[in-house]
Length: 379
Ligand SMILES: Cc1ncc(COP(=O)(O)O)c(C=O)c1O
Image 1: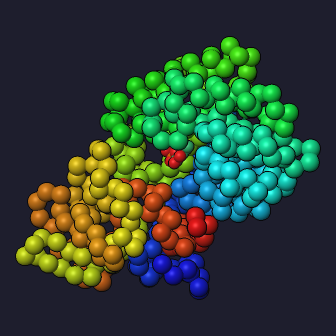
Image 2 (image 1 turned 180 degrees about the vertical axis):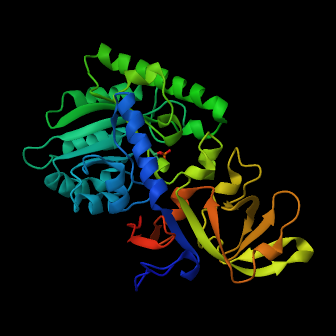
Image 3 (image 1 turned 30 degrees about the horizontal axis):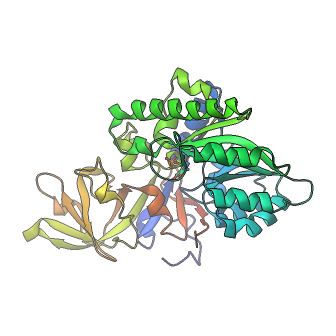
């Protein structure tokens, strides 16, 4: 999608080139505030993840100190580090090949923390001196059931890696971090079970480290669904990391989030009516919607997106530049959506959708563009 070359500030949604990505300023601000409030009430530190939007403006809204974040990509980290963010966790498995780049960042940041989950990287960190007067501050990623990155909580290799780090003078082992991605796999009813199992496993791992005289000053848990809950066992953690909550999306609605809290949408134009097959086409396909959505475990009906003003209408199929809109049940009232009119779509997956756009149009209470945010692309 072309970057905004001329400003759209002051334009109404119907005047924008489509497809385009919209951010509701009031909702995004509210979502950020409620996550800060809930971490505060749990008395846990909060390190927001900036992966959902990858913008300076969003990062400022997510943080209280405008300094402390978690990034999942090196580009995002460089951008934030050049703009005042000074306490960054690279919450992604560190690869040996990236250590020289990381070293440059470590030189300029007050606090840079790294995440590891393999022996090769641990050995590389042991063999590489950090910048003068710094140590490598390292978290071990622990897989407690999400089956993504991290050492398996019950296996020996994680403890062995920590043993290697513990005696290295230029490594400061900070603790452990588990992403509770498995919370996304179930329903709302399964969420607490996934959270409690993850915490229990993570704390068992911490106990094993205590037995070898290693203290974890950080015991972190990540993922929007779990970070939106609260329970007594969460108080045994030290910090939470979440990112998607800033925009949220339809996937989060399967886990308790309200549709009305979704702070982003895609504006798209109706380009064709096909009453004989009860479908209309819009100018947003794979070019502007994450296609992760339609295969979601809990997604029986929502397709890739729902029409914001009529949740009975979904984008059920996508081509490169076209989306197919159809009714989930009953008929599509074509008269409400003339050809050329603009509809807003709530994406099933906002992280994958937002990053397809070079500019986000931020919409104020008057329905007009008040800001433009330019995300840093991953590659
Ligand atoms: C390791 C890790 N932590 C935290 C997050 C943020 O999770 P969420 O988007 O559910 O808030 C992610 C997102 O991918 C992640 O991979």
